[in-house]
Image (tube, rainbow, N blue to C red; front, side, top):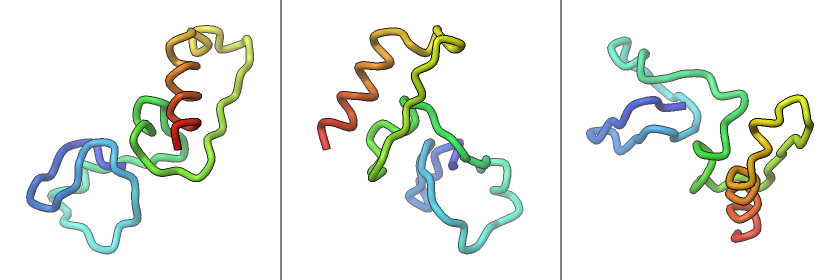
Length: 76
């Protein structure tokens, strides 16, 4: 996942993809993205969204986050 905007390469914070080549200078602009938050995924075009709903992580069950995840997916 891209962590900084890179206007020269038309790559922006939150973009996910495959690395074809890499400038060593730009390696600090990337991070592994096994899982992304609802905020980061919003606007991306994933075919499926998995949203665990468990009480152990009750802070993530706030109405606004659930609504955002459902609205984003149902809007497709």
